[in-house]
Image 1 (tube, rainbow, N blue to C red):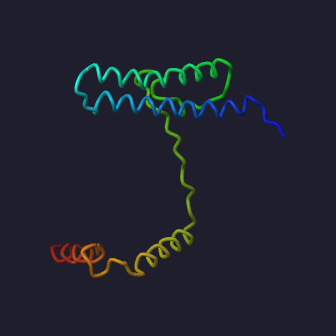
Image 2: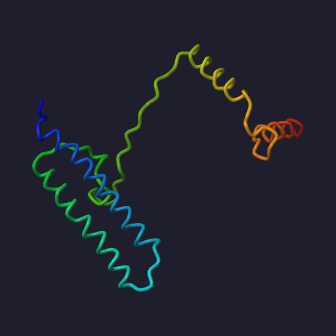
Image 3: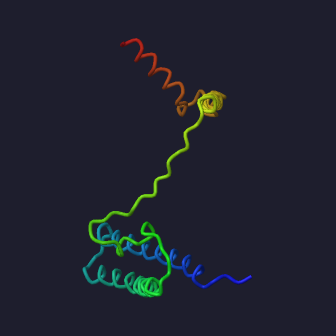
Length: 140
């Protein structure tokens, strides 16, 4: 069974975009947070990462020029137009029916109340929540 080169390139382009984005983040961190003894050391570190990133960027641009499909949300930060954030693909949760929602809520509560392995220790958060609720009710 053979796969078409276009499909294979689509996934290759996606991984190349992810790797370029990683180098973009590493460069941004290096320039903003890393401390170097001299500016020459900073420039050398920047040049080292840039030399690794540039061939990937060239390959990605070549694949796009060849017509390989890609999603706008998968573009690396450096390939996006100035001031345009990455598109967010939000998934809408499916509404649950009322009986199913009540069943899930009851199931979550029963799971929570089975007892904590930290009961009686300083990590027992349930005890502190109960104490908080009692104080809140007394003040109201």
